[in-house]
Image 1 (tube, one colour):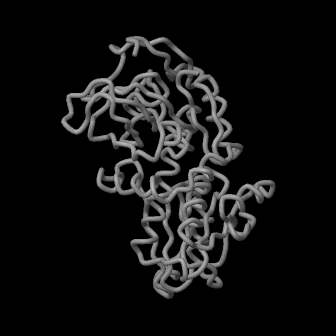
Image 2 (image 1 turned 60 degrees about the horizontal axis):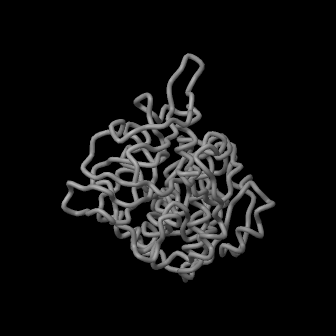
Length: 330
């Protein structure tokens, strides 16, 4: 371990946000009781918003973005962690108001960290990342509302993205029949390899629709929001459950109460940023058991720290398939 490291730092200029790779030292890190040698990070939709400035995600400048990282503890004043522990971090405002994962080192509160299951490597932890961890929270949300594989189809919107890809892999392994909604027809083979039984065009759901429609699915995972979520709710079967975890189409919800009062549909909000530690540990334990690692590898590409600014633009444009592992030392 060196006292100096590379980091992608974002500064605010008159012309907008400026990401650049810099050499930093341990003294540049923020407060925390655990120091981690970072092995990898990833690129989530929120990272794209942060780095491009498309949304005011970053609250302090200059800042190291990256809402995720995995790595090895090098120093700890927290009783729950010791040097050598393999850990993962998702959310908690890291990469927003606290230096994040696009760096060789990180210093954070130990309460923000989760020890990795032995079955998940540091690289695979970032192939999962916040997107995959959120997908697991969505699956848990469906299960806790009693949605079973025999109840009917499960819809996954934004299917070729990070949340969607992992959700399909998880649900199919657990025995659910998955319907994948995507705007990328070219990804049909990819989505079916992950476990989707049927592919539908996102245009079926992305425009303004009827307040209530034909019953089509027993549950859904939706990282898209807006008209898509409204139509998903309108077409959910009696007593079904929809887990909402994103806003790729928009933060609005142009819906009515009809699906809730006529069919008893349940809308479950999924928060990955501030979720309590016990829920995080449950999600990561289930990922270690229920995620097909071969499918995870198939949906993953690798990149270096210098690739992140372009990837940030690409993910907002819907050009990133599956998951990206960022080697922060490359």
